[in-house]
Length: 404
Ligand SMILES: [Zn+2]
Image (tube, rainbow, N blue to C red; front, side, top):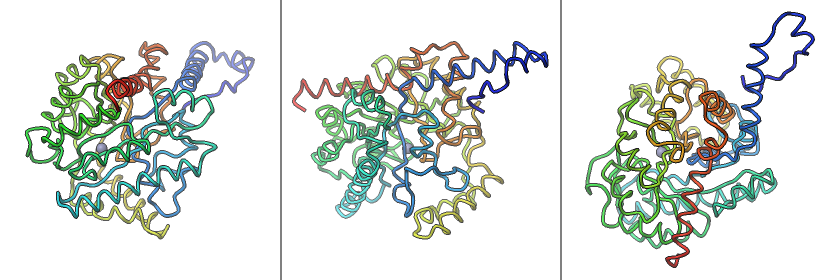
């Protein structure tokens, strides 16, 4: 529905007596599209590297969410006016053993190499971003801005010195933990073992500060979040998290903590999952256990998995959430944290997306709604990239003055 062209000639409009209101609405819509196009836009958590692992999947091609299940590729980023974001090196949590660490380290290294290979193969349309200043410079060339982040520091094992190599290759945002408590931190969705961060987890935050990396507390327990806010020398981010106020869930966060984050200069990027109760029916569990079919060598097997996924969603939505609920969550964050502390991290390709906003081509409608709600372009510029880049600048400055 975006970008309704002013296709009807004015004469036609006047002749049919079809006057002011529709024209005004059309003008408003095209203004919003122009504003969105002008903005530098970044998403703080893109799980798109998962699709890079799918045989035959090419980010340079346009895919369809319904049949392919992906939500981000270069053609759709261009269509949705998304200049770039933090491409995630995610690793599933495994055993806290030497063997588990070694396997995870290998997987994470492969994921990072695939991101770098993707950038190299698309050098005319994408470029690796390392510094906060890179974003505007790269976007001005028309290329997509590719930052890198780590979701789950489990692959670092018990030697935080291994973070240096990921940093050298481009990682600028790191979350200690994912869905399972690990050697660094308690997870928001697992048993408490450390009462927040472990001693090693505290060292990891210091190492992020030393290198110039933004600490990311999404998935960390509330106590770990509190300690990260306290310990980090520079403001932290919640790269894909929503408010408890609209849906109480361990992955969401209280207004009190959102205010504390804002007071310390931090940023919360609005998620598009956990907006509503989540189904964990036997059917969903069964389908989830077949997730690896999406990575099959056989295109038919990949497509059959997505067909089964869509069929199950039609009967039992994973979450019964729509664009209105996403906007309500965003508006709540803006009200509690303020426009200087909100960003966008919808968990695209990681389970994100809601009815009415299924892939990144839908992003201009967020800008349109924020403009209609009275926010100006300056507010939007902060939320769409300025705030996360401010955190990266702070991380860079600290590292530069403390021997990173
Ligand atoms: Zn996540």
